[in-house]
Length: 53
Image (tube, rainbow, N blue to C red; front, side, top):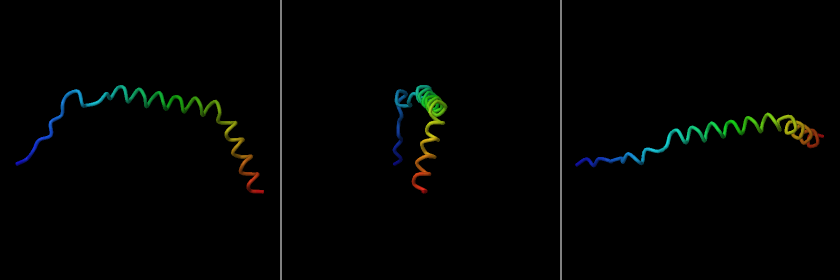
C-alpha cells in the first residue's frame, strides 16, 4: 500500500521573507565591499609582499 505524505498549508514556508533576507544580505555585502574594498586590497597587497620577500 502506498502511503501519501500530506503537507499542511502552514508548512510551506515564507518565501517572500527569505527573498527579503537574501536581498538585504547581498546589499550589505555590496555596501561593505564598496566602503572597505580599497583598504582590504591594500592590506592584502602588503601582506603578500611581506611574505613574498
